[in-house]
Length: 226
Ligand code: ADP
Picture 1 (cartoon, helix red, strand yellow):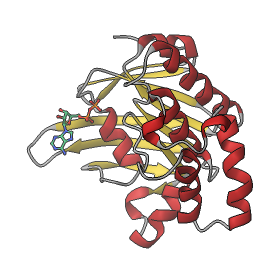
Picture 2 (picture 1 turned 180 degrees about the vertical axis):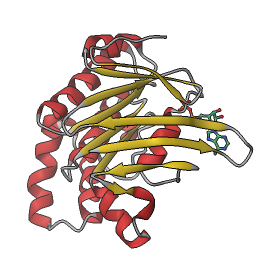
Picture 3 (picture 1 turned 90 degrees about the vertical axis):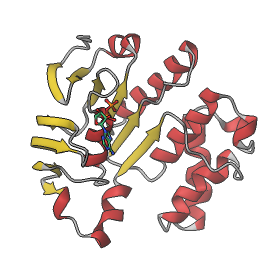
């Protein structure tokens, strides 16, 4: 599904963020990407989302080189990928329900579909009781669950969770990871970037360890090498 072919990325100031990364991720996998701050994790995610281009090498999604996707076709790629961030990025003036519904409206979904799917995904993340709360009325763990509901509501093929538990305590971290696991069990590919050794070990799934822009370890059974 995803293929990084000898990808390097240098920024204008000369920083080498990725250095010869070759990586393949199959549909349905759950892959954690770990590494110290500055290792290149966010750069990897940006290249995958087509927000930036590699300096050399290529990044493909379903055998299509992302660099060759025309600007007008980029929204289609983006709709196939749901993204979850450390800082949630919810709209403050919309309720939990409206935040999720808005993602469907932007994707051009019909009102009836929105009315039936939004409660369903909010139930999946156990937020039925709080669906009319605004972000300021929700805890960190609840905010992240709204963000997950928003990311999955248009049924993407891939979820990228970029440090999703960075602002959460251990109990909420555990809950978020369980939800990501459930989403993966339903067939969606998940890429998780994290610093949290406990999360990766509890998952027991594939772990890619990065250091200074290189992959230094790729382990299929949840080992964290740092
Ligand atoms: P991580 O997500 O693992 O913390 P990043 O991909 O954010 O790593 O960063 C990798 C390296 O690239 C770091 O040295 C960082 O300072 C540098 N970097 C990231 N973005 C930019 C940018 N826009 N311009 C210059 N350097 C950058």
